[in-house]
Amino acid sequence: MEEIFGMPVNQFMVFLLFIFCVGGAVLAAVALRNRVILKVAARNIPRRRAQTTLIVLGLMLATLLFSASFTTGDTLGNSIRTEALGEIGEVDVVVQAETRDASGGLAYFDQALFDTVRASLSGNPDVEGVAPLAHEERAPVLAPGTGLSVPQVHVLGYAEEWMGGFDRLVDGEGNTLSLADLDTGQAYISAELADDLEVGTGSTVATYLGSQPSTLEVAGVYERGANPAGDLSIAMPLAQFQELTGNNKINSIVITHRGGLVDSAEYTEATTSILEPLLAGTGLEVEPLKQDALDEADEAGSTLFTIFFVLGGFSVAAGVLLIFLLFVMLAAERKRELGIARAVGTQRGHVIRMFAFEGAIYAVIAAAVGSLLGVVVGWGMVRIMGAAFAGQDFHLSFTFSWRSIVIAFALGMVLTFLVVLVSSWRASRLNIVRAIRDIPEPRIERTGRRGLI
Image 1 (cartoon, rainbow, N blue to C red):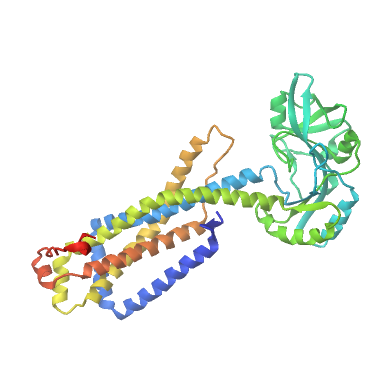
Image 2: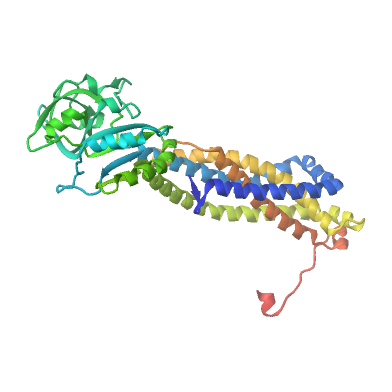
């Protein structure tokens, strides 16, 4: 999750922490000047442990909902990112033709342009690999032995000598499959394609890369690594692909950056700024493949988070009313005590400060407990959603960030303390005589339109 209501998460966190720190500093300064009031406020907390526990449980409701929403948002965002990057892997940037060919496929261009691109990026420490690639996106494949076929398969031709920084083909046992080990007429196929065709190592498949079918022997089955491609794919050496198609050109140049699967995208802008002037007028364009996928995933994750957050807002509103009610009832319980304190010289401002200090202590405890407990609630929500998505091709992987917990803590603390201040002001408005005698305040009858409102 990178944005909250259109604001970058880091900026939102700094804003909340600024408010929290300023409020905490003001409260600390006031406490230093009113140490006796602070001691009176803090004394009430250990004296009524059961009441303190109930108050903390009530105050932490809003923070818990914030934390659970942020945790769910982190999980959804991370899961959507994982799904989006599943077919991209270590490929960050792709150079392709600006237009498609007559059949709607990727247009081919001279392989000499690969040397130009590689030379321009050779001195860039952030670029880990540049490789030529030829691939057909919609090649039909037939298994003569089983009679089964798949109408659209992604066939890729890699140049093994340039694939050092990219994903490697890995089989189900974790072994790396090297294209250099293939003989003429051999290829590797994906596990999904092998299942659909009911073939395995040693079987024969026929693929239509040109006007005539090409027969290939399955030399191995890989679980992952053929990027960028879909689940149904075939991988072979670039030279063999070009021989089967009768075309010595390529239709893509793939670029990978240093860093992890997600972190590597941060160098995309620098790479595109180098390549765009270089490729001007060549008919090629630079596509920030990974960054675009991450942006779309973040947008989808933010949308889902907003839905959860807005729905949770109704519960937060109920929590705000509960906080106000708790402190009004707390003031009502201590009405005689407050009346006596006012009778011996305590001012309304002192009563407000006393409740503010006590409420601040409650709020800190409640925000800390609620932000951590919200992670547990978020985990439960993810498990429930995971069961709902069990039949779909989408997997939820639970995750959370400490940044979200900090935001939930600060947001819950700020909101709770603001309500505490309002309720403290409300509690200070009492009649000293009636408070000492513990009799109710008189009802004020209002007439006219203002009283009705």
